[in-house]
Amino acid sequence: MTKANERRQFRFALVKDILRCESVRKLPHDHKKLLFRWLANGCSITDTPPDTSRIRALEKAASDARRLRAALGRLDAKDAASLDFNYSQTIPLSIRLLALEELSNDADALARVIKGEQADIVRLRKRRTAKSIANTLAMFGIPFNTRNDWDVDERNVTTAMRCVMFAMLEADAKKLHWGTAAAIVKLGFQMLTDPDEEKVVFSEGEIPVTAGDAEDFRLFLREMPEFNGIKLVE
Image: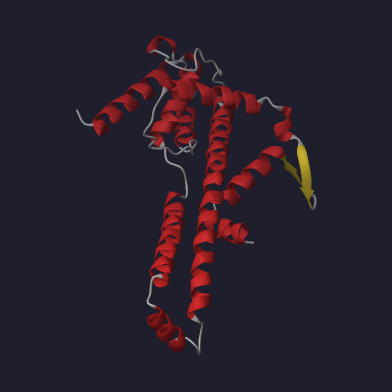
């Protein structure tokens, strides 16, 4: 059996189990459809860190700049002087060598900063997913019950955990673990019941901005390469 078939069968079993749960079984038919629709759009956790291609490109640019600078440094003095003479009307070779050194250093530094931001993006995405799914569970009256944070067998899987697993499956997450589902349920419940989430941290004109809103905006800015590019080189 292919992995695609296994995932389809797992999805079918999940939906069947969720529909059998008491809290879901009593919902009207249109509410059940709405529950699965919201769950399908509730997960934003990815298995790979964001901006990987940017980091690789920056590291390659830094490496290529260092290699080119080293190659130019090995030129015979006469050839270097000849090239320098040709460039005398534009940018001297010595300045070009300095620019290559600065480029390699700056590209390395920018790659390190983006790497540091990846952990923050992953954490914020997990919190956004947990909060979104928690709101959905609360909306449809599904209890936030969990049994274990790891090695949960089928007998101990709760409706809330199945809902999270369904959301992860719909988001095409490659790593599907019941422990992850339980952790997301717990985090979502914690965020939903945390009064600080709704605490106003500042106001934009007459619009109050809560801690949760500020966190969502921070993730939005983190996920924008254009914003990151401007911010990181300032």
